[in-house]
Image (cartoon, rainbow, N blue to C red; front, side, top):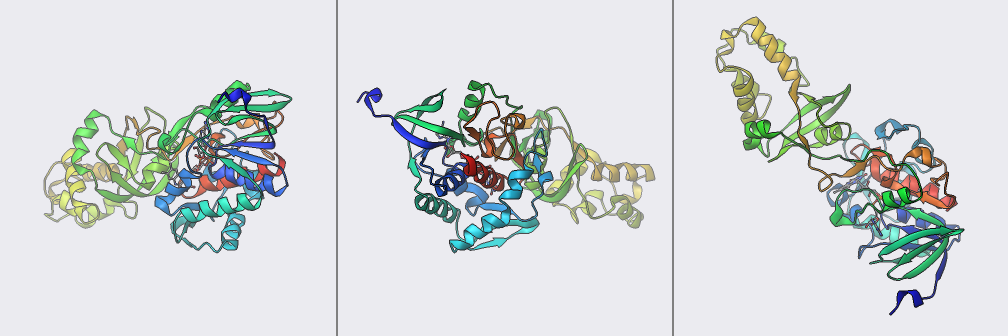
Length: 396
Ligand SMILES: Cc1cc2nc3c(=O)[nH]c(=O)nc-3n(C[C@H](O)[C@H](O)[C@H](O)COP(=O)(O)OP(=O)(O)OC[C@H]3O[C@@H](n4cnc5c(N)ncnc54)[C@H](O)[C@@H]3O)c2cc1C
């Protein structure tokens, strides 16, 4: 059938992207009796929500502070996060009888599965009269007074258009660059984009040194440009991962070094001084505090194999320093294929922090990860999606 013959569909609000931010926005706009149509190019809604938190969805963080977000304008996220807080989302879960639990560092997870949250959002959308179209290919977007969105399902006209297409990570879950292309098409600036919350990869030399440690992990403090992240560091077959590395990856810039404190809870030099007269090999002593395979490899590379009593004072001081400041220069990251999020996005100067509407294009809104607001690991990104979607839903 000739698509041009299909009748023009008229709505108040079109939302492109049925992820966390788009669905939340749809619910709120629907509750205001706006006629809302959500367009999604995948066959199901909320694919990223389903896989999030290892299938249990780390849906928010009750320790949330605006400082936990990266953005060229660190103040931009404050308004939305204050108007729809972690406790507002918790209230929604409780109204739907969804059980959750608190893990470390304020992270909240579903007791059941992430699917519970997707079902809740779907139910809320239905109750608010929201319509959804899956497998919908958006072909073009134009504005002539109203917005006209041309799709494989026909042409749709609306006064408000909300772009909720997320970032570039995990293309198999639906990620596309449509949000960024749409912003560019309407003359809005986009900040530098990069994969974030992503494993780091070694250069060739480090890979040769550490490839056999794949699977080994230890607790450490990872530092970069004055920021420090405590948590697990995990050797992969290509580099380093684990929560502390994923956290630092969002800040790390290509070419820079990161430092790792291998024994954050003790002073290595004090330990050496205590054992100063011992004939224990350094690698065996360190194995009491670090995984054996790692401490042996690390000592092979950084300390000559001999009993502790045969080291000079200066050598012990230097080794202790290296233990607390082990320096690695990653060659890169695993990229968007394995990044939890995209850092950077629509320049927040272009948007109202109160409504998420583009200042230069009335009626055009951007919500969620497509905006230059990137949260740290631990439920912060979904909370940003809920909060930004919520506020846009009050105005779209
Ligand atoms: C593996 C993984 C685990 C994660 N775990 C967590 C976690 O536990 N806690 C947390 O806070 N964050 C987590 N995140 C990050 C979080 O999922 C995202 O930040 C959040 O989902 C972003 O919401 P969004 O609505 O902006 O985008 P998305 O959820 O990505 O939704 C965008 C939607 O737009 C659709 N779309 C894209 N392009 C088009 C197009 N051209 N036409 C039509 N539709 C389109 C997509 O298919 C998708 O449905 C995780 C991410 C990944 C990849």
